[in-house]
Structure formats: C-alpha cells, structure tokens
Image (cartoon, rainbow, N blue to C red):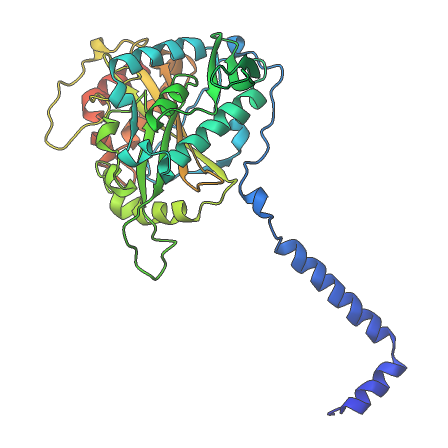
Length: 398
C-alpha cells in the first residue's frame, strides 16, 4: 500500500524506535566510510615509514642470509613478496671485506660501477634530486637508525674563515664505526660523486629509474608509463656492462631475457606505474658461477647467447668450493618526494659444496633440469646451462 508524507510522519510519531535505528545506521555508515577512505596528510606522503632499530646488532657474528630459491621448474614471473623498509639493506660479517672490494672496483672500473645520465649531473634536474633523496635517506636516516652500533650521526663544529667574524660552522657527517670513516650530510658533490660515496659505504647496489619524458598515449597514461634507468651503482653486475643500460627503458634493459616482452613487459610496466610510496617488494633469483666468474661480472660469465659456443665443463673440472650458487636479493620501492623508483641488489654467493652438505644437492640438480621444463625453456641456455649443467648435476649427485 502506498504511503504519502503525512502517513510517514504519523507512522514515525507512533514508532520512535525507527528513528533510533535510522540514526544509528547513518552513524555506522559514516564511521565505515571514514575508516575505509582515510585522508593521508601530504607530509606523510612525502616521508618514509619508520625504520625499526637493531640496537644490539653485531655485524661480525652475523652470517650472510642463506637463500635457496631454486625450484623443480623455472617459471619466468615477477615472483614478488612484500617486505618493509627496515629490511632494505642487510648487514653481515662480509661487510668490511666487501667494502674493500668495492673501493678496488671503483678505482679499476669507475665508469662501469657508477653511472649517471648527463641530466643527473645537473643540480636542478629530477635525476639529481632523486640521487640526493636516496643518499639523504640512507645516510641521514636509515643507517644510523637501523644499525646504531655501526653508524653514528655527528655534528662537527668549526670556524668558517670565509666570514668576517669567523662564525661557527656546523657540519653533519655519518661516522662508520667499522671503518672509522666519515661521509658528509648532505653531500654537495655531483651525482656521480654522491653515488660513488654511497656505493663504497654500503654493500648494496642501486638502480634509480624515472618516468620516460617522451609523450604517452592519453588513455591509461598511468598504467603505460615507461621507466628509464637514470643512475646506478652496480659493483656486482650479473653478466652485463651497466653502462650499456644507462638511459634506456626497462623493456630495452630486459631485451636479452628470453620471452620477457610477451611474458612480463606489460605486467611490470603496470606494476611500476602503480607502486605506492611506502610499499617495498622483493624477489630473489639464482644462477651458477663457474670458476673465473667473480662478484664483478661485467664482461660475461653468467649468460649464454644464441649461436655462442663455449667449452662444456667436465665433471672433474667442478670444484665445489669455487663453483658457486649466486643469488641476488632485489628490492623495489618508490622515493617519497621525487617519486623515482629504486631497485636495490644484494648479491650472495655460496659454494655448491655447502648446498650438497645441506642435503639439497638433489633439489638443485632437479632445478637445473627444471630450467628447461618451465614456461620459458630458453632460460636454460640464457643461464649457460649447456656449459655447466651436466657437470654440476654430477657433482651434486655424487
């Protein structure tokens, strides 16, 4: 039966409980709406999440993390898991020796281990702003907060003789208690200088990517935004010369990876465009280092190429202490202010003797065969499986 407005008024007057329920329902809806759609203050959007300190951390007794990411079948995918900003840079007992190696590599191969596009050398450029934002966070916040037993922020007081009254000048530095060295905060050098300092102060490699400035289609612009490598530190390149990747789009950088374009390109571009500030993701890959291939592998030794012929490794040539499982733990996050994307790479190597002693020899052997059995069988050749595969499997199963 239809009711007019007078009938509704009469009904409510005689049933006041209805009003109570109506008000309560409206209040609950408003509460739900506020909680499900929070307004994030602008200053919170421009900052990193808090870093959790490790006050009693002892780098000298901390073993490197053991990653065993191999699986029976290899499938080319992003394979991302969520982590947090506190776990951005791991430390362990190899830290001091690795820093010495980095200093040596910088002296020998300065243009290979550190690179910046020409724009990154200009202080007023977005690239330079991203480089300084990363440096300021790592040096000014992350290291002294996460590892206070290793790093301390200091303020050095001195006289500024460039002023008429010799006014006092305060300079901030970060003291590395392990090496007894200091680096400035902020760093006023060129983009290359800043990255050289950062790359020899932590055992971590960094890739900084910014959106390509070339025109994009109007529809789905955000999803289709392409990212370009603008600056890097790669002291442990995994079989490539990073200079050749500088200034190139993500898709071009991955050209050598079999079936990257059809399997990953669109999903990676979409993920990169949508990655929110404050979210950190990670993945771990693996390969086999044969004798003669070190952490610095800019000139090959890790990837095979179509038509390339290499000597097949014999079973007796496999040394379990020299042939290594190489794992890269990679993270990705967005800088809060410049919105640049930052890849970090921490490279671990483990003698395959250790894998065998852990009882994982058969699992790794199956994973070597599995390189040919996943969604991209060509990855077996890409990882140089035809060169070392049979010999390493025989060693692991002996």
